[in-house]
Image (cartoon, rainbow, N blue to C red; front, top):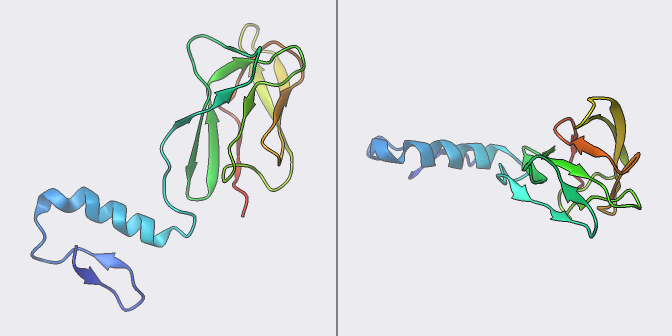
Length: 136
C-alpha cells in the first residue's frame, strides 16, 4: 500500500497485488480509528476463588474505543471475579444488568475505574451484555 490521501489516509495503489487487499482494508480502518483499531479478544485474569462457568473463559476486546466483555464467571466469596486491564477500563464505575447462568435471573455486575469487578452475589453470570467506552 503505497498511496496516501492529502489528509494522510492510506489507500491501495493500482500496482498493489490483490492478495494484499485485507491488509489494505485493515490499514485504512486503523488510520481512521483514533482509538487504535481492534485488539482482538484477550483472556482476562480471573481473581482467586472465582470460577469460570460452562467453559466460557472471560475475555475482553476493544474495537473503535468501545470495550466488550464475554464469558461466564462466578465471583469469589467477596463478589470479585476478573481484573480489567488498563486501557480497557471505564473512566467511571459502570453497572450492568447481566443474566445469571443457572436461572437466567437478572443480576448486577459492576466494572470499576480501577479495573476491579464485582457481582451482586457469588452466582455465575454471563458477561456478554457488558459494553462501555474505554478510558482516555
